[in-house]
Length: 94
Image 1 (cartoon, one colour):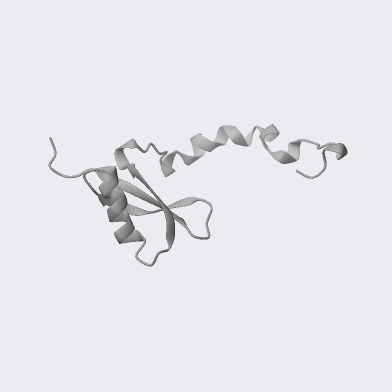
Image 2 (tube, rainbow, N blue to C red):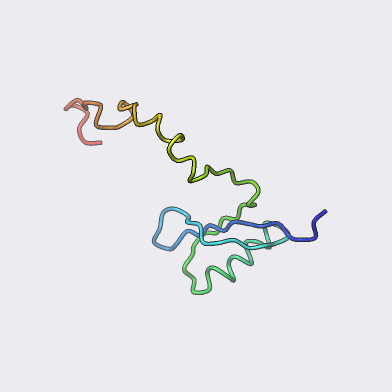
């Protein structure tokens, strides 16, 4: 068993923002301590209103090297774009 604490990815929602953004990483023994440490490290000037911590090994991500094969199939599906559909006048503004 490793003696190193798990790595946590930290996400902060700013006072004027609607979404959380990734601000960094830190090691902590559990989620509660990760939140407390993230508060001390990443919100020293009260710039956040919410903190999310996620164990780094729980995050699955695509590789930038896979960008082409990953996104190419969607380029041929124009029906996924909102400009493909006509909105009836009686619907009004969406």
